[in-house]
Length: 204
Figure 1 (cartoon, rainbow, N blue to C red):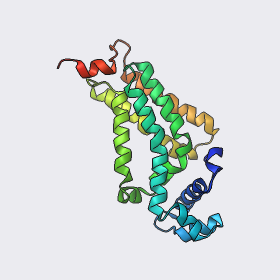
Figure 2: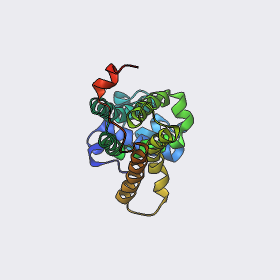
Figure 3: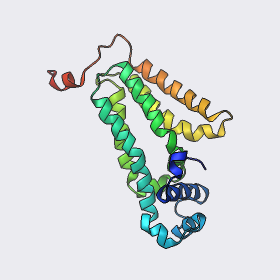
Figure 4: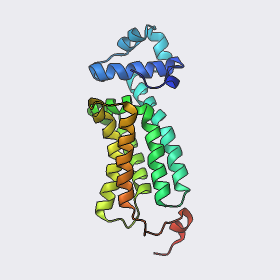
């Protein structure tokens, strides 16, 4: 399983990659730290140096994904609420998800474990923040659905499209195109853009 050349550089990242591979093959609950160590051909002591539990491994993976998401949110909150900004949010989020495909497969296949580890709520909070950046405060319900669907199409698409024939890059571009169309449809061009500072000072 490849998650990018940058993830092959050190033991911590190798542990994450192998753990996700075994979680996908056998399930989170049925995979032990011993099996992860054996797959890596390292001692359990070497594994414990980086991660004490399976939960620590999964949490570290979400933290790695959260970092670029938080940077994206911070950038977007300082930009005018134009369609161009929102489409850039979608494009950058698509890039942030590029190395997270194995993690999203884990989430799909181990939903009970995700709930038990309480990482689902943290992930949900970031998704709601991104959703708020894509929609307007006075958006009609159908436009709100378009914006939230744009985000979830990028998540579910990575999982579902692995069973569809085609070049991986072409599939990513197709998913991004659909998300872009949804956000564009939810933000008609005649809507006046809102700047971040004016959103806070505007009178009710």
